[in-house]
Image (tube, rainbow, N blue to C red; front, side, top):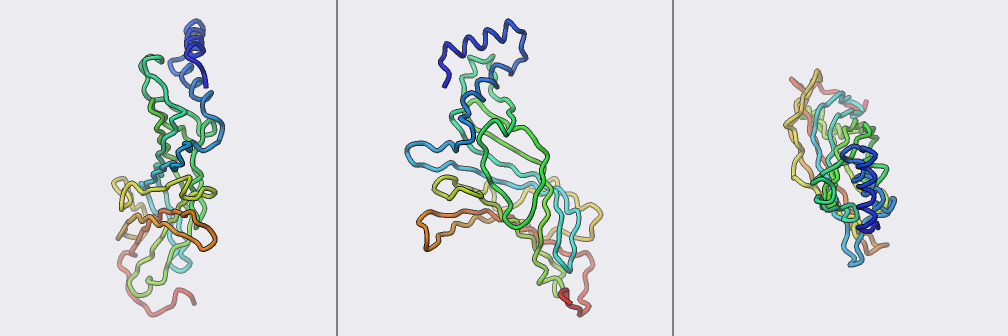
Length: 234
């Protein structure tokens, strides 16, 4: 960790070199990031990571196979006090933007599908709290068992940490539903019926620690669906 004197020297050098407003601050934050180690305190408490989904668009959905493509924003929030700073030392700046590769970030992934995201910066606040909102394309296989009877297909998007159990990373959902205020149905022939978020904690016989996931359930109903008596599995 940098001393106060080192910080002041860094700021002074930046002023002499006519650096941009955030240069000294970002260098200071990166110097304290401690690589990719999880910011778990010695008191044994886990790192709380909140997750939320903003649904943007259902791009495609095959009612026979259940293959779907969905556009969404994922919002992840956590706190890493190692990255905090005194705004008075840095021109009263209270928030900056940092490359995700420069700091620790939670390895929360989609378990039942594939995602691709645009690389975006993380918002880092002076108290060490962090927010990352990557625009994400999701490809998954949905449940079509109710399609022939009710015309509905349900997509359960399950997220969890890939390597950390709940004693280290506590994944929580910020809402019991998905944010659909920006949702556009596009040109697909489906109506969005339901959108919920559920958190589950599992324990296995092998291990005492909890394993946590959050599932975003999206239920779509085909417009004007009628039962024609054919099987989606034929």
